[in-house]
Image (cartoon, rainbow, N blue to C red; front, side, top):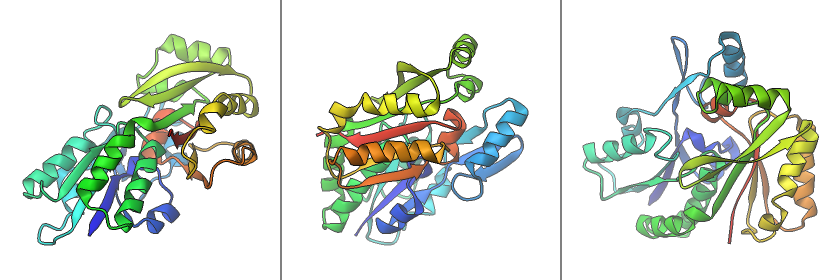
Length: 280
């Protein structure tokens, strides 16, 4: 049997995790001297409160080699595919490889660098889980995922630059002008890294919809099976507007809303929203 695992940055809902039988290995979120497990005992709202009170971005850490080994059965016969956040963003990928090597399971454990984050990983995981249910081998699944990995389209529009600034991901000047001029950057993920793109202006109901509508041609030429709306805590009315718009396209078979977990939310801050899909 092929078992699908992922680190917690994939931001899949409990319903999807249960439906596709995915094992989730949590990363750590560190607030001062206190350590929490992403998706287990910390919610994004708690870290936002801590971050605002301390003027800092929470620290995050990859699961340890020992943590990962707890999800692997050395004495069994199962094959494992483990998805991780981009290797350029975390030690999670390397630790998964070390865990397999230490147990002598390199022939049964396949670690995939998603070259992405959040549901940019989740899109790959679901396809892998579907193939596993069809009876494909781990090697067959890995080859397929490697073929579509570069077709994942992951982008987000940011409400506030404060959290990126606190985490050292943009200059103080950029944070100042972004706040003063109500600029909201679109950030895309490709090649395992984040890239700033277009900037939007205005209130959330305007700039979010401008961001989504800018992708209409890409959306209408994407894989039809599913599209994700993933956010870090947005106004429900704004999320509903995005969902209604995607429904109006009459194109996607499944439109899935998910909330970003604590690790992803700690860096992008509240109000971030992304529409993620796989290009044909």
